[in-house]
Amino acid sequence: MVARAVAVLALGTLTAQEYAGSRACAICHKAVAARYAKSGMARSASLMPPMPSAKISSAQRVFEVFAKDGTMWQRESGDGFTNEHQLVYAIGSGANGVSYAVKRGDHLFQAPLSWYAKTKTWELSPGYEHADYAFNRPIAAGCIACHAGRPRVVPLSSGRYLDPPFDELAIGCENCHGPGAKHARSAKQADIINPAKLPRARAEEVCMNCHQGGDARVLMTGKTEFSFRPGERLSESVAIFQAPSGAETDLLQHHEAMRESACFQKSPNLSCHTCHSPHGVSNDFNAKCAACHQPHGKGPDCAGCHMPKRPVGFIAHAALTNHRISLKPRTARAGGLAQINEGPAPDATTLFQAFGQALAKRPDFAGQFESTLRTATGPIANAAKGRAALRAGKFDDAVALLRGALDNGYRIAAVYEDLGDALGRAGRFDESLVVLREGLGVAPYSQTLHKSIALRHIQKKDYDNARKALETYVQLFPEDEFVRRLLRQVSGPG
Ligand code: HEC
Ligand code: HEC
Ligand code: HEC
Ligand code: HEC
Ligand code: HEC
Ligand code: HEC
Ligand code: HEC
Image 1 (cartoon, rainbow, N blue to C red):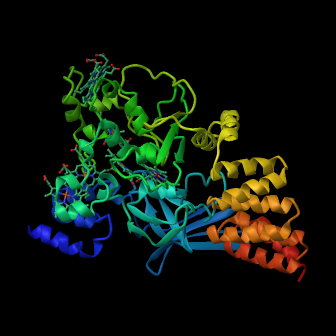
Image 2 (image 1 turned 90 degrees about the vertical axis):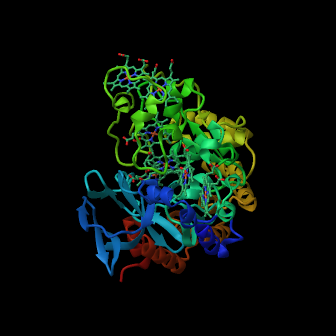
Image 3 (image 1 turned 180 degrees about the vertical axis):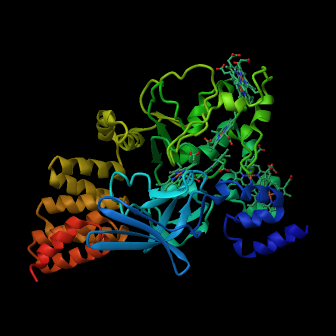
């Protein structure tokens, strides 16, 4: 009762909120909270800890990690520039690796170097070996939805956060149990979700939302990456799609692998939490097998033989432990792009987005992307049709479609960039400039928007404003040598 009184006191200011916060849960659930605190999930994101310094050189660039005034920084320098930012958040507990976020205004961006836990070294962040993203790669809402507790995000503009950006930094109790303020006041069982008591599919979806990234994730109309609540049908918020994979691929994500297991297919109740106590760090997996199987004399490490581990690159976002428990070799999954979470058959508006996202991995989906887009409706479809018209050189059609998308609420950087481009190509420079500047309100760190503004001024032969725009650009993105050279040309000799 004392604990309860303390909890009610602590919650005094939270009456209007649906969430209580993990600290409030810990007041009554001390043992669970103490166990959970040691898990990777409880440390999925954190304020920047002190780290060893480093200096890494490539042909064109030098990257450094260093401490300054008790905070950690990364610097990128090259011929004629240096660019440095303070690291504000660490993403990942370090089980395999840690990536870092820097703050630019109210936007979060990834830092070029990540910490590789296995080798204990700093190296280029995944993807940065192909291109120099510098400090310009937005930390998308999706990263934060999977890696953080309760972020405070501006909907639709991925990468833009409120200040402070998190109500709770690491994954906490309510990510799996749902908003718990009511339960924390009442202490009634009926007021909180226990995933173990949900129908199997609903329980799995609590984990699946984060542990099955999929090849495409399409948000339902009006939903964001943060809409899903445990206990709800996941498909009300997002449709997760998987492209067919060949028999040789056994590098699956946890959910699809489990689904291909004999244990899952032949027992109605087996789910993630059958083997994993999500609060615990120590799980005796072999004891879990013993609940359904007799040992057959090959030794006690059942999982060691039937769920082998494999080496996977840093942050593969795929299972390291093979969750497909089966004696049979894997058969290729036939068919097209398939929705993996239970839900109504996806309509064309959902499908074209899924095919569009999967295109990077499967260029052969182009035909299906185009045919589903044709019948798709709504502002997101209009934005895609606008882009297609722009590429086909039909600038007036593009302008109408892209404007329609913006007017109907689809206000993301790419739509402003495309509309600015379409207007520019149609020779409507002043209108283009208005749209590009509007876009900066949504995405103040878009390289494309800043570059297009400079270009429009050049096209107008307004070299004064072109120079100003280029100066702003070079200040924001000093690593861009091409634009630095352009600025020197526009500024003229001397
Ligand atoms: C004031 C004390 C108190 C606080 C604060 C509290 N709980 Fe509980 N919780 C209880 C009690 C007591 C029970 C057992 C209720 C019963 O068995 O009738 C319980 C049960 C539960 C259960 C099991 C429900 C079931 O159906 O099996 C879960 C899950 C749970 N709490 C999660 C949470 C979470 C998450 C928070 C924070 C948002 C939280 N609790 C905060 C007292 C509290
Ligand atoms: C909000 C997203 C999210 C949800 C919901 C979630 N996980 Fe996780 N899980 C993660 C992330 C991110 C990691 C990697 C944490 C790290 O090490 O940085 C992780 C790690 C794990 C690990 C590795 C060990 C550990 O504790 O880190 C297990 C096991 C796991 N999750 C199981 C589950 C199960 C089972 C569920 C459902 C009951 C679940 N997770 C729900 C995001 C989530
Ligand atoms: C759909 C959910 C999801 C998204 C989106 C996602 N991650 Fe992850 N991430 C996970 C899970 C779950 C793990 C744990 C590894 C596993 O079991 O797949 C993980 C692992 C990691 C790790 C290694 C953590 C450790 O402790 O070893 C890092 C770092 C990471 N992710 C960074 C990112 C970044 C940066 C982004 C955005 C560009 C991102 N992730 C997007 C779910 C996600
Ligand atoms: C990654 C998802 C996840 C997180 C995070 C999580 N839980 Fe749970 N919790 C579960 C699942 C799944 C079960 C059901 C486990 C079972 O009984 O097999 C559960 C069961 C419970 C129960 C009832 C059974 C028991 O073990 O007492 C309580 C109480 C509880 N959780 C409290 C909490 C509290 C408090 C926190 C935060 C400190 C928390 N949980 C964080 C997934 C989670
Ligand atoms: C909830 C019960 C349950 C749990 C827990 C469970 N299994 Fe199973 N498992 C089954 C069922 C049911 C089958 C199908 C048996 C049949 O076809 O007769 C099966 C089949 C298998 C098979 C044969 C696969 C094949 O292709 O025929 C292996 C191997 C196996 N399990 C290993 C394990 C291991 C290892 C664990 C622990 C990590 C485990 N199981 C946990 C229920 C379970
Ligand atoms: C039959 C038992 C079983 C089931 C069911 C199961 N897991 Fe696991 N899982 C394991 C074992 C065994 C490991 C290896 C753990 C270790 O070595 O510490 C593991 C490891 C993991 C890890 C750590 C990363 C890795 O791949 O090694 C994550 C994350 C995870 N499981 C998530 C899930 C999720 C999500 C589900 C449900 C979709 C699930 N697991 C279902 C047995 C299971
Ligand atoms: C040294 C590797 C190894 C270990 C350890 C092992 N298994 Fe197996 N298991 C196999 C192989 C190989 C087969 C294929 C059939 C055979 O040769 O007996 C098999 C078959 C099975 C089957 C399906 C056929 C049957 O006998 O029912 C199940 C279920 C199973 N194992 C469960 C387990 C469980 C539970 C454990 C832990 C107590 C375990 N295995 C430990 C290698 C292993």
